[in-house]
Image (cartoon, rainbow, N blue to C red; front, top):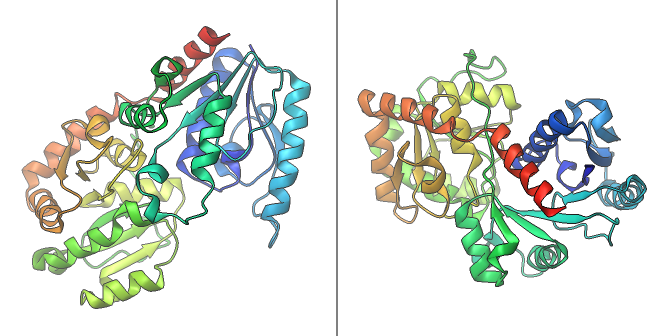
Length: 366
């Protein structure tokens, strides 16, 4: 059985979708030795670490200035021709923007990560093509994988797809046994810190976290807020921080690689995930795999993935969010309980399980 994955997920250096497909392809290739990623020009670090025989493409540490659109077009053309010449049994497309005609494959699969655009259209540009591209990908697919039951239910309800055409297969996480020193690239905050990881777009509710943090005199006094990833603070975010009477040194931002992020998880007093909606929620699972207490929104897929291993709050209530954070960081007992529960919960979500269930689906479909 020959399984082809396209280039779409690997145009970014990191990212949850790229991590998912690099782990999936690697584990399946270990079982079959016949899974291949067709990414003619990629800059993704996860794929760069895979065996060279698995990847049809060239690693570029950084795309040349203003070349993204040209490289995307080249990837479309070259990926399409290379996959077609390889004659795969399974074509598993990694995102929605590339919907080529049939490669002659026995089955075509697409993974749906969330229904954010459909549920929160106000947080996206009015002409964002993602919803229509997603629907086309679903129509062309023989089967649709959803990464949580919550996402699967949303998909069935919003798109009207036959549930028999869908499966729920959870993502995985690597349990971290190594203890990391605090990264030397960053001056350690004078105070302990609350951790936020990832992008900060509207539905992620980052501004809600800022407001909850500012609401608590105790948290402001005893903890800094450390943001890893997502780029520098925007002009609007800086203005909100100013309006909340927070000092610049209280809200710190940094970019980090995977090893450094693990270190930040391990040294955090708590990881905070205030999102209004998630299709799965990989960062809190990564936090739990590092033994970090998780304080998390009770929305969408989060309770499904985190179970009893998190301190929950209503993401629409800044008061409830602030109180939940306080209940963890000011209680050694609760903090240690969540560390232990979280690590055990993370053990339920392995990349081996994700790959095994996906491979079984591939076999069924052909």
